Image 1 (cartoon, rainbow, N blue to C red):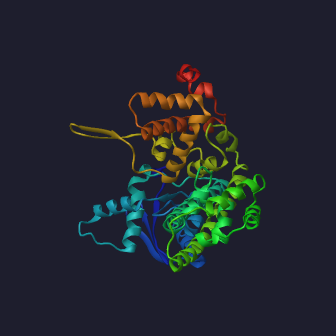
Image 2: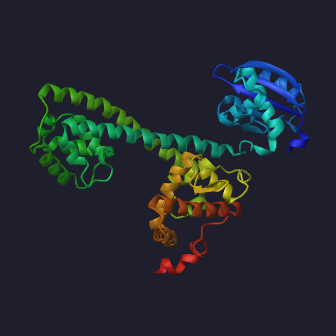
Length: 416
């Protein structure tokens, strides 16, 4: 939809219980304004209001709003309508163009949003036309990522508490063992022995039974002997009453930890099932360092709308891997971006780090950047920047990753 073809523009200032709507024409004249409720009746009133000013299925009226989520946005995007999510900070800057008194009102903000589209429609990009499947993957992948972060946060709290009164547990589960306190057997043992006193009294039968309840099948006897030795060693202790109170607190944290760990595992399974159903899954999984979980996170953030990014540079800027230039007079600065998709950045750094082992070309590229003086973060970001360009090319053309073509200039380094 070209800006010259549009004659009516809509702005919506959304809130929790109601939304203010404003319609303007191409000359900036206010055509209509209303306040709608945040329910089905309010949404129907909004659609009727748009239809009364020329909104049709073939030529819908574009809408500017300061959010990209929620039922209201879902209703507006049901057809071919272009919905523009305007950054609140940008809307605030536009508001200053109409007056210096700093006045503000919800109807006035809706009018500002409508005028943003009227004057600068070509400067803003509508929300991507992603498929329902990728939207579902985004919901699950982000929820799983949040669950992992929540599990890590609670695990840190649990480790800090154990350090204050229960060093035996830390020696038992945090010494050279993958998973640490998040391991099912660690949580099972802590549940039956929340204090050092109770842990020292555990028999081998009790320990072995807890390990088997947690799913331990191999090496249960050796692990039982090891844990009993660790728990019965000599450590500094808190006073009995204080130790008992800390044990009660630890059990409360452990229940939260169990729930967070179970949620992360359940969501991970749901993410993988949905991700493998998407047409882009095979292309994404062909890249070194990308498995189902990381691949789903990357797909969730970039979507499957092929027109979302004009070129690879746009994707790199969105991911924060492309540098940004600030030049004014004699000052010229090139540095990393601070405005970016933080979830994609987090997944991208994990991807680049894993690619170092899975791809000789990626490892050679990283080492070359380090030799040129880049720190680890800068070299990793540069590698991610290159990988994102390759991902954009492969997704646009429907082809798999090719190590030889992707890192042809570094083939001799990779071989060495």
